[in-house]
Image (cartoon, rainbow, N blue to C red):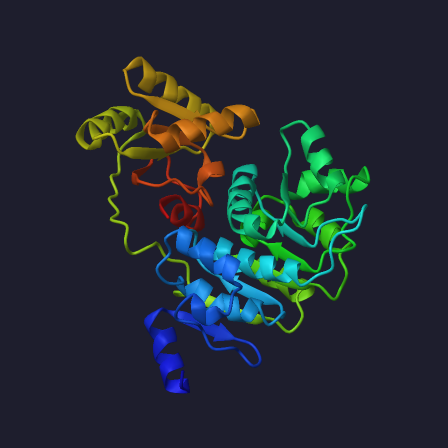
Length: 361
């Protein structure tokens, strides 16, 4: 592409770039030069063209340089860092006994980590790349066994990973590709000390990819400390804004009118589609769910006080449409990939604009 074509393409797809010697974006999957086995998986998944973050993020990541990606939930960023990770692993020498992973992906929540693992398994299978998911709330045994057998890719939440490192079940000596996914969310959840502790054990000549949906001061400061001479790619506006494809209605009602309003709304919109209802508190989630079930609505609740097994079950029932209504706290506001959610109801209005944007996105 000529420089003019590149500018037009970036403008059309709302891609803003920064950094030194930025590579041109790619318009199609074959342009990327991915190995044949990766292209076959892409074709099998039915993807037509790269999303904007992939079109510009892949050439950047494959240069081996650090990268800051700012893109909203649902923009295809998981594959934007996973496919270059697979190429990266295949270029390294084979794991020796006792070696830790080559790729480390840090994610804020268990559900988000599991979802990344599903993609890693799908696209890494053809080149026999092994992965495991390390998160709290479940027995350590199977996770420890995976680590001891040796895996190229580890996807982890910060707390459980530190646990595994301190009990010497794995090490980060071979990590050369580090991904921080949803960095802003991890900082919101108070994970900064854990992230620092983990990164301090990784060699300085690593490649770091730093993904975030928003760009507040704290996120920027952390990036400045962890990344060296990074590329920067922003999809859409760097200012926080809601996804334009979503139609928003605001009803202002008093607290004691809320439940009746909700039931009336459900009667109007319920046609077998999935409906997600956000609450501020776990207690609120459980109270409303009890009332809804007593009134005959097929609903389940999802929040941080439930065991991992219960959260997995609730999510699978909701995804399958067996329980088309789910009430949830903000633990479900990001990174949950559920197809066909037609309505999102903010029963309690969230505390910040950022949370609102993620909930509806």
